[in-house]
Length: 79
Image 1 (cartoon, rainbow, N blue to C red):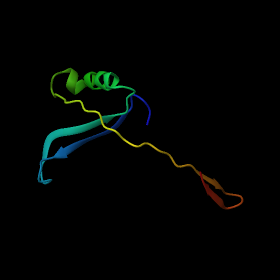
Image 2 (tube, one colour; image 1 turned 90 degrees about the vertical axis):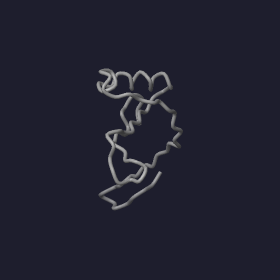
Image 3 (cartoon, helix red, strand yellow; image 1 turned 180 degrees about the vertical axis):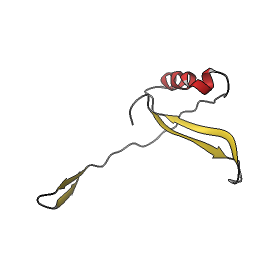
Image 4 (cartoon, rainbow, N blue to C red; image 1 turned 90 degrees about the horizontal axis):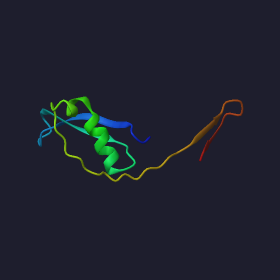
């Protein structure tokens, strides 16, 4: 995830999980809370006043996995 990128944006349901309510969840990857606020405020739906937002910090444990595949030797390595 890169700073400033929209990571997830999807509609969410009501409490029963049966009906979509026209509200959503947007997750940005940002370097700070202020940077996340600036990204969110720049969203056209928020900027126009068509939608409001509540900004929250979400802690995620980030990691990576590297896979190397050598076609000529038909070997795979995980790093």
